[in-house]
Image (cartoon, rainbow, N blue to C red):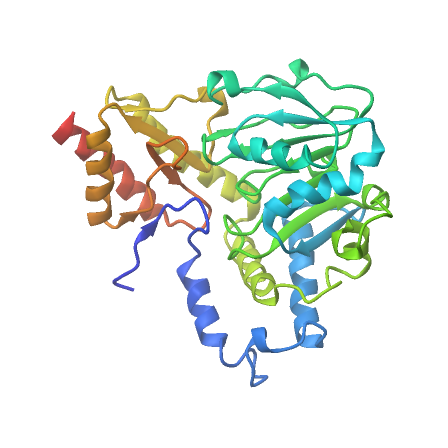
Length: 360
């Protein structure tokens, strides 16, 4: 399409154009049933097949064993900020939370309303540009669990280690799931909202150990209990059928394009091409510890704020959209999720070089 731009939004993010065309083609008549997928009951065998296939694809793509439940929920990652302590605060006297970026801080703010928590590690003092090694985190034997965000989209920083705390690890992977290889068995509870790497906003993926979910609080309404959702195969209430359906199409796309191994390779190569421009320049700056730079969200600044405004204006003229950094930190941010075309990244790289030549 002539009017399609290169969409660097942090979320909701771009989707593959071929998937959008498939959705368009199926919107009035899904697989010859005479109805749209969003018009039929979630109990209909047609949708059940879509749902079951999507779950199996998640298991295949991420090597998820039968020891884990795979749930498709609603409420985004933000609801998980509250549901996690509601369900599991009884497992210990306190809960440990790492403050490694803005989303970690939001999770801490919500959880603190519900449970007693401790900050086991914080990088707030260095403006979230460097995260302590896990060996330096202060984990207490009385902690119910440890919580952190693996990739912070606003600060453009990520955790590369796998957890081994001796306590259940609850990890927000909203922006990096399917972008890098992970050993699922090292995690107890993973959650991710869809609007980065596997669909439109409105659906949330939870991958959690069955033995952990079995310990969900008995004092909650069913809609807030993880084990209740697991018992009903994520259909305790009417799910986001459209989001689930699109997620399945994204999983098809991953399978057809090399799986998570290939996605990680692309993520590293593509973000490195942008970091190379930044590091080879006195014009652009990235403040993050190079060993912990995100492979999904590249943040950078220009010393002159007026030039940042000019950068984004001229970038838009080149079809490079949504590069403005989060309002809390400013600067620019290129979110390079899996569905973003390679041409978008190469165009950004060339634009950055040209802009520096003209304005540096």
